[in-house]
Amino acid sequence: MFQTVSLAWIFAILCSLGESSSTTFVVDTSGRGLVKNDILEWSARTNLARIPSFLYIRAPASNRRMYPLMKLELQGARNRIIVQSGLARPSPPSIMLCALGEEVIAPGKPFKMHILVRSEDFQIFINGYLKYTLKLAHDAPLIDKVTKLAVYNSDGAVRILNDTTYSELLSAPNCGFNINSIKPPPFCGSTGPVSERIVGGVESRPGSHPWQVSIRTKPVFTIGQPHICGGTLISNCLVVTAGHCFYSLKEYPLSKMIVRVGDYYNRDGTPHSRDPTVENSEDIEIESVIRHERYDLFPTPTNDIAVIKLRTCVTFDKFKRPACLPTGRNQFRPGTDCGISGWGALNSTDYPTEYPACLQGAIIEIKTDRQCKTAFQEKYLLKKMMCANTDTADTCQGDSGGPMTCHNEDNRHFLWGVTSWGEGCGDAKKPGVYTRVTTYLRWLFMAINLSPQPQRFQKDVKNGSKPKYCHNYVPADF
Image (cartoon, rainbow, N blue to C red; front, side):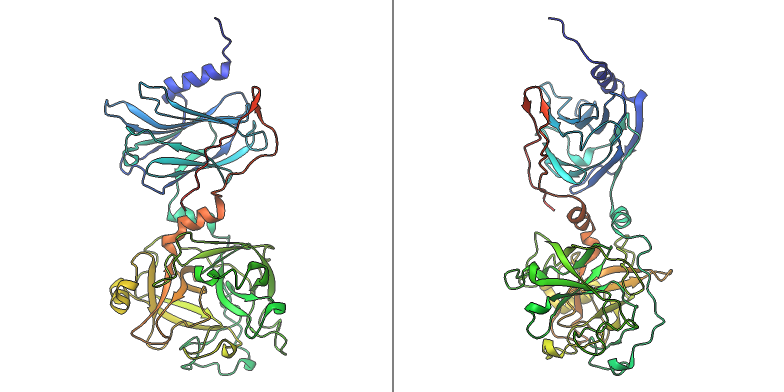
């Protein structure tokens, strides 16, 4: 029986047979392959004509032919994608058609696709939402054998994201700059080094830590000290803090909490509260909190990181600016001096009501992993933690979640650590322990940009007589 075949499908077949003649962009991964938790990004605009675009992930098979671990076909004119695997096998390939609707895929419409590489499957996100999980064939080549990523018939490119690109994608423009010209006001007290500041620090200069925020209870729910934790602005809508700051949402539900930005004098209802010469504070509702899914409090806080999405975005000024995210694991090495700040306890015996009114700051030194391991033994986890202090300077209770920032030769400040835990305060032999931010750049990117929950479209997208969706959702393992 004769069947009509559209030109688009003929073109698709020709592309799959003779791809080299229509190559738009190729990434050679023969010296690297893919590794678990890699994220591939394909950003482009859907073709205006009825010509599909393709993304191939290829590896050599045992018969020396190139094996497509995945073929992704994007059909803008039909508002859908087709995902295939096992194309080189004698058995029929695994095929899934995803009807997405013109609000997602349409001719001339920009899209951003991310593919999370896992050992047994690929998770496909479109415009930030998980659409499909492609199981790899049991006899498929291992992901570390992948030699080529190729995009055809597309005006965009594919790339493998890394720490540098995560930093570029997450850091705000002109991040990391501060002012250091305003002297601490006289109403803060002594401005010289004293043993009981942030433990060994001084009152910071207003505007010198413009990324510092205070996570606190709303006044109507406050009994005693409202300040709970610190945090760091990384964009006008996002704050990075410690996971343990949200360990008890029953005691402190988000509806009872706010984030105060641009603050310096941390006392409400006093003569110097909201003093425009030292601060431009603003209280912002919390939209959501994403805490690391593998956070654990015992025996010591592990994967101690969370990101807060603000309900209202911040307008930057000299007292409110974001810190940059680090660009690589070796950007700052042990022995580097970095800054800490917070409104935490002045010593380990202070009650919250005795916390300082003015923002404190100090300079500490990054220690080697050997020094940290010697101090804390099995409690200290390599790659996930770092430790730092000086003989006199340290963080303490109430500083949790706050920033440890290091600056480069351009005096741009990067969030290198998140204040996490310690044993006592100010003990030279027991440095403060910080979450190592570089370990969590991929997690931050996914938590901020990719939703592990599927997005259902209200529009009834039909393929033939029945609506079709990609429905084999498997939650992403962030």
